[in-house]
Length: 145
Image (spheres, rainbow, N blue to C red):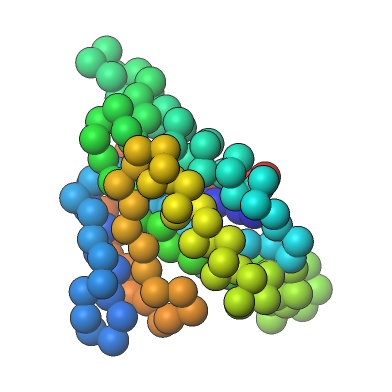
């Protein structure tokens, strides 16, 4: 399981021209599910995202989590995080989990984050999503479990 976690001021997600989800500030999390990813990995990933200290405290040091600053999380499924382009120029996605299982694990990560007290919004799994994002910093963390 791999996540690209970005600190944002505003993020909006649309499908087919219709606004689906938006957050005023917090984290945009692009989540890729790999073949064989487990419930335990979903638990670890959720914990890491919820506790990741990437927001500045009063001294300007990155020392606060998304919950500490009362931010929100926009969790976006992205199988292309497991695109392998080491051979040729067309990525292979054989490492990405099958859609039904990937959707299940993606939903579990969202559920776990909510249980940890985070406000979580999601996209539509498998849809052609358009995302407007105003990065803050920029701060981008890549985490794999």
